[in-house]
Structures are given as C-alpha cells and as structure tokens.
Image (cartoon, rainbow, N blue to C red; front, side, top):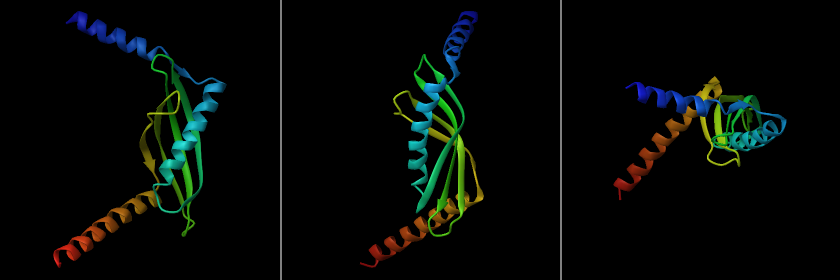
Length: 135
C-alpha cells in the first residue's frame, strides 16, 4: 500500500513540477489560440459580433506540452446589442489543438440565450414530428 501511495505521489509531483506561469512568448501563443477558441465558442450563439477573449491566467506544462488558461469571452448580440460573457478554463496542446473548455461563469444573457435555444429546439422537433406523423 505504501508503494502505491509513493508511486502516485511521485507521478503527481513530477507532472505538477513542470507546470509554470507562461513566459512572454508562451503567453502570446496562448493568447492567439485562446482568441481563436473564443471566436468558435461565441459563434455557436446566433449573430455574435465584436468577440473579445482575454486571458486572466496562463500556465504551461513542459512535460505534457499543454497550456492551461483562464479565459473571459465577451461578445455583443447582433440584433439586441446585449452583452454576453462566459468565463472558464481552456486547456489545449502547444500547437493549439485538442482544446477543451469548461465554463465557470455565464452571465444571465448567455443563460437566457441557451434556454431559448433549448425551447426552440423542442418546439421545432415537435413540429417536425407532427408533420411527419400526419403523412
């Protein structure tokens, strides 16, 4: 049992020991890739414009060659002019691939937009099923 705990502790320490704050070059690279991911995420919502992504933290793990960033993504709605914001953790490989975003905050406008999207999906699905069953 002690050997297993020591192995787990050793692996944990070796992985964590390589993570450090991004240097200037890594920060620029992370900012570039985070901006691309931010645009992709915001464009999943209808008529997103003026998309901005800011990094609030950046670390780089030289062992796994992965970035871990905290991002804040802001955009404006095309029709309404409402402001939208999602914050969260964005992790990706050093070449910008294999990105994974997990949100930690969504403002009320984003939550409302998601609720309407689900509602429209349910109503649209019911209309399609109703039309198909009448034939």
